[in-house]
Length: 375
Ligand code: KG4
Ligand code: ZN
Image (cartoon, rainbow, N blue to C red; front, side):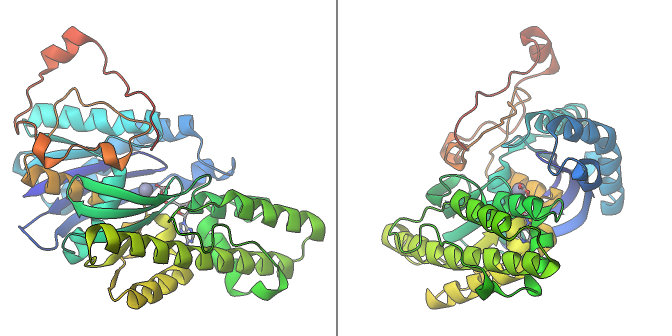
């Protein structure tokens, strides 16, 4: 089964072709990612309007390159997948509409993929990890511990009550003048710093639930920076090291709590799996390894380029859903928010052939946008 995947939910324009040979890991035939970092850098973060326009300009070329590198024509594909959210709605509309057009003209099934589900299933693409496993998803927009019980079957065990971890990295980088994106910059500076020179809180440490809170930690860094201003390079390095040390300890503690809840509710996980941009961080990967070992399981950590946003994870999630007959119609909605718990489960499978035609879309007008929900 060979699927094209399109990712446009944030600041990466990405397309990939992935093969799902059957049960077991997949084969990435192409994986093209165009980062918009330079277009957003001057603003210190992603500007939704700039992102949507950049996706429009680049997406057809990125898809053409992915198809060329994979050596496939649209006719040789089994399905067309696109991230239909959650994410910045302008970008989501660009990717999903493009996928609908390709699905329509090539008469292939469309799969409207939840971006979080794609992160959640990446370990099956790289390692063929069997269900059930415990997922730690940490990106710029999400920080969640999830029991992954099957395709479409997710139970959230913990989440952040305020900022996501990647968001905290980005905000700390901004206030220390390290630019955007913040994660890699803070990680680099932390290597030369002395964490013991700055005292920072460990929010939620020791709580029995598996939730996170990051905004107090970020505020503590800001207050410390104001106290020490003007900051020397050594100050910046020490503060990055202290911030990262606090994040690492909190992540370990929250995952220990999450794994305890997992065992109680779902038995022993086959693995602890990490995903999302933050999982590219070496210090965090190291502590995840330790937590997995303590819990008597293994860590499955996909390579960093498959932890950050990419088209291969969308194509793979599309292939997993397609294999179960979970396809979508051309009326599939783009979502700004789309909690994992609300993705379609196999029991609600839709027919494989699209049952909405372009005539239906013309008759019913432009696609609607799903109402915002917690995601
Ligand atoms: O998954 P992702 O590529 O995009 C979404 O947010 O969906 O994650 C991007 C986030 C950013 O906040 C970025 O600062 C963070 O992941 N990140 C990192 C590292 N690399 C990326 N955070 C900490 N350490 C890193 N090495
Ligand atoms: Zn992501």
